[in-house]
Image (cartoon, rainbow, N blue to C red):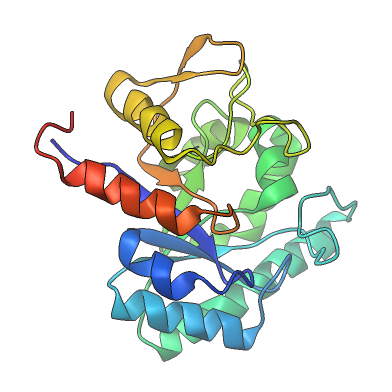
Length: 242
């Protein structure tokens, strides 16, 4: 049976990328919106290449002060130019190191907004349209962005979160709520296993809701991210997995 793929958002100043990269399959590199600069992008790209990890772009609202986790009001032109600038900056560095762009994954407030808002989804897809035939788009299962991206011919991969608690509508518990971030490695493994094998996630109300995933995110700024990732890979290696 195929084992779950793991991904991390990197280039965000956590300084643990050298430990994380050998433990994941793909990474989403911050490209200057919420975090990241030319040096951090290039370092992440070189580490990804060295570890044979797929490299993707992690664009966001241009809001370093709030780490891209707050909605920023922008007109369409400002928004599109910002996203395209972020992607172009990373893509040029990827080309320099002969690393293909594997995927695009929006960050934070932008990720949450396009999951539920059709106009925001269309605006984002317009911003990334030149990459439609070049890479995947990471999207949450059952989301607005999933539906519209498929209608427009984007290639998608479903992403779920191993270290975050889910609400019944498949939105993530707000980070400000107690227990929103899962730090217990066994609990993270259980959540990933249930989604991967059963196609269901247990929500905060203990309901089991349908959820599909091709790749699972562990946030690099979760305090024990490396410990979690090592544990997951150990479990995945066991012959009885699945």
